[in-house]
Image (cartoon, rainbow, N blue to C red; front, top):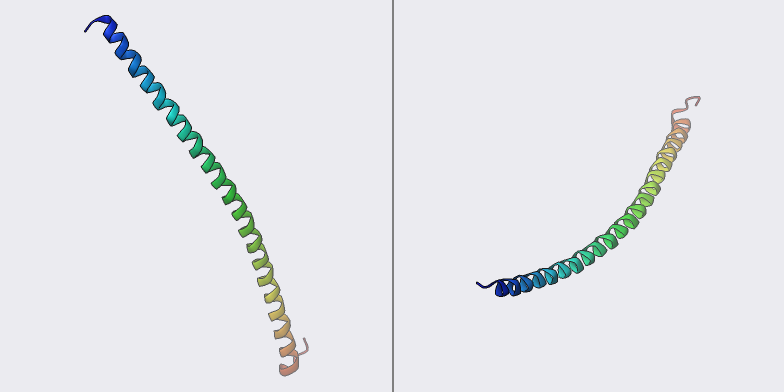
Length: 83
């Protein structure tokens, strides 16, 4: 093959490669944007679930306290122990 033909073929291959790199760069930027959005959603969901868990823990502690109060009251009334 003549040097000129090789140069033209290389130029075409280089241009095709440049186009593929540009397309892939756009795809990666879009994927990165999607990942960032999903990460923000996960953080928000994690905060919400953490807050709900804190509320549930406080309710459980409160119910345990109330149960102990009820047991104390029952014990005082029916067992007649000096509590």
